[in-house]
Length: 143
Image 1 (tube, helix red, strand yellow):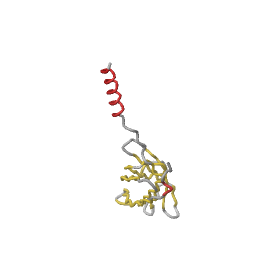
Image 2 (cartoon, rainbow, N blue to C red):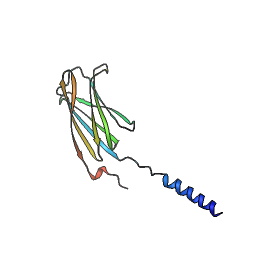
Image 3 (tube, rainbow, N blue to C red):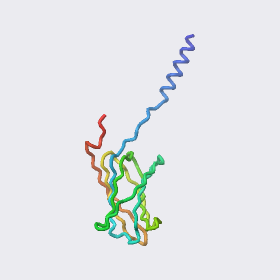
Image 4 (spheres, rainbow, N blue to C red):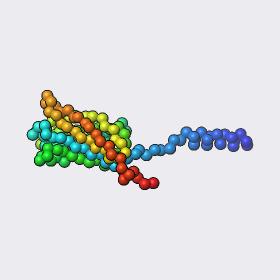
């Protein structure tokens, strides 16, 4: 009888010691992107972006174009913290990609701001990224 209790206790110990707690990824509340369009060709009618990560998450978004200030802006909310691949596509009026560029961005807890510049070079676009990260108390959940 003692052997049965020992085996049951051992099995329970192994089962519970092997289970790992599930961790929720930290969420960045806002990811703001600003794109300088001063060198963008006139044929571009739409700027679309996407963020993808190693967990197969995909977030697709459109930029708001301002033809007066020659900028495009967008804010993406509730992005898990970590490394993301940012792809920005310039599309013509038929939604055909005319220019595309990609870079890796690191999303932190708090407000993440990325400033992008499109440069017309040899018929393609190069993205120069500068980022600013602001951490504020309002970005952290109370718990």
